[in-house]
Amino acid sequence: MRKSKADAAETRKRILSTASGIFLRHGIAATAISDVMIAAGLTQGGFYRHFESKEQLVAEATATAFDELIAAFDSASSGKSPREAIDVIVHLYLNQHAGTDFEPRCPLANLSSELRLSDDGVKVVALEGYSRFVKLLASYLMRLDYTDYVGMAESIVSVVVGAVTLSRVAVEPSFSESIVGNAQRTVDILLQGAPTSPTLMKISGNKR
Image (tube, rainbow, N blue to C red; front, side, top):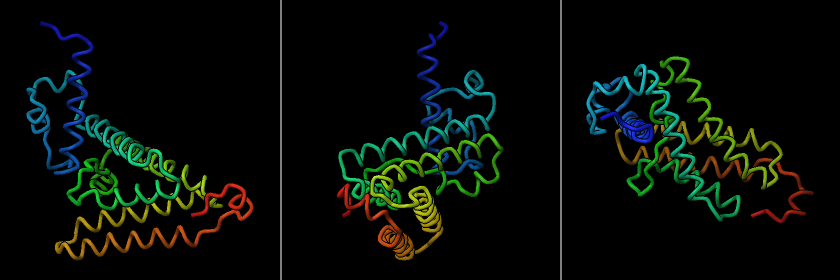
């Protein structure tokens, strides 16, 4: 029996969600198409009914990973003040491997070396994910009246992505924890020392 469009769409969504998780945990090169399809409870032969190539799967699975990450940040920061929201997002990002209930992982920190070697389509998706992360933080920094809120957001993203990437290399847990802790302190220093607009701060009352 031929599947309906709704069934096909749901199957495709399941493949993407499964692929996203496997890529982030085991890497792109180490994961075969068959690994993804078996994990999704499907036959390998059905793959090409949904995707033209592994490269297309990687690109769309990376986009799915960013969708899940940003959605999780939005949920966790909902109802919080701008500074509280930033603190929550930074903490969750830095501790994405700490064994908490926070499941989403970031492709930038977990697949950085492989993304660099991927085709242009994958790189475009990765850069779009980076931009979404920057814009999310910038939206809160703007409300706190930081003068260069986009530059600040870019700096924070660079710090936390680099820290998580390095923490994954560390063999000793204490070294990994030190890297993450130093990154948290660096973000705090950036937030404390960056210039703001005194007039707007006085009017808005957003100062922590």
